[in-house]
Image 1 (cartoon, helix red, strand yellow):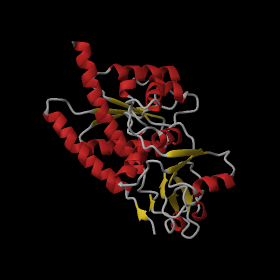
Image 2: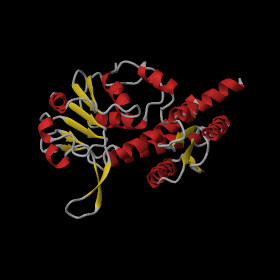
Image 3: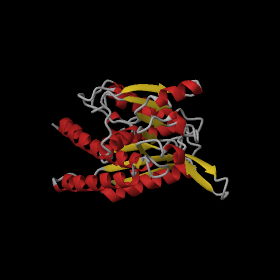
Image 4: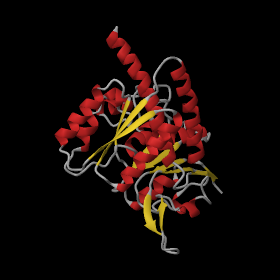
Length: 305
């Protein structure tokens, strides 16, 4: 039976640590960190996600506001708004809630956010630094998985890891963190890492997963990772989250990529959905916002010198 990794508890522990660190930061004469979320349109899921992030910010002592913008805004108008936020010295972190309306290019918008305020880690300069093992903002979900791995005492050095899914915001940076050199600035995990994706043949996916000491899956395909694909004692991290109808109760429920009930009998560690990786994403956003606040004090001091 696998040990359940309680992401909610670990995220709460991290928030308490951040709360203490922010109190010290403010006691040293600094203002509280400030996070601004940009919410375009009225997607209910996006609205809920932003509210959860703002609630966490309040909990740790980060000041926050949500800038709500109608879905009809043009890309140029949104770029102008982001430039205003970039130039506001009282804002430390800028969060663009994705997805954006179809007529707006997400890459252009993510690249418009100031590199030093890019708390999501989506700007190409932060991506480039991160992939070069340099200090940068790291996307919050893979950073949260790394924190779960470390706080759960799971060994990664020289181990086999499989990342299922190759998205630019989760799969790719997760693979980077797992395989890169732990001696460098990202404090990565030195695992031998394989990436599988939608064009990996099912039998090959099963083969790679069966050899893995660590599996991180982020596809949004319910039940993709089955018990016969998991090595006994492996650590399984489920980033996927999909709303389905329970065939027994008829009610909607959230499930991950992993056949949880079966896999927990085989794995050594496993994250639940919900309550596993999700809360860690929010906690890492708070951590990145404090990091941004420290960056901005240094930046402003240099410019005022």
